[in-house]
Image (cartoon, rainbow, N blue to C red; front, side, top):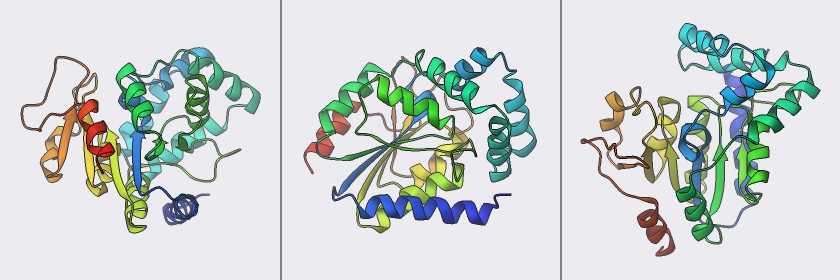
Length: 241
């Protein structure tokens, strides 16, 4: 059984090892589902395997966004036979389309920054998404399938990752959309809440705890209480560093 303490230890060791081998001073961390893309790609995975998505929703309903929730979700996925799992990851990734604005943003800054795609969802599926969009230069951090993964990415893990990068004297830009991203956005030097289809309903009550938070929206909806920016402006800021 993976404990919360051991998970933290493994996540921290993994990111510290990666940062030690990277010489770029600027990092851009982007969450996957409903941030880099408009949807939750996990649903495509469930559709392919004809599984009930409420199985996962019920785990989070019972445990909240705690480590226990993400651990139990990983146990759920880990029961799926590997060949079926891998095929479902390929098929679900084929249905994913990244926001064009993010693709342009990434292309603009990729030579100056270390890009990280971080997910609490299905990491193998996101690996396929990266490959499908020719984004192999992005470093993927995820974990939810114990036959291949050694840790899970929960709310705390995301915060630890952002803080570890800062501790290595790197400047961190982070994009997220839910409370799972809260600790990451709080730790980052520059933080951006991407307006999602649920209008970030779980996050907004706590948004004022991050004084440097700005919002990015790809729709006509904006939160009145959060300063607004766009990816072009963020890219200009990064390139000017």
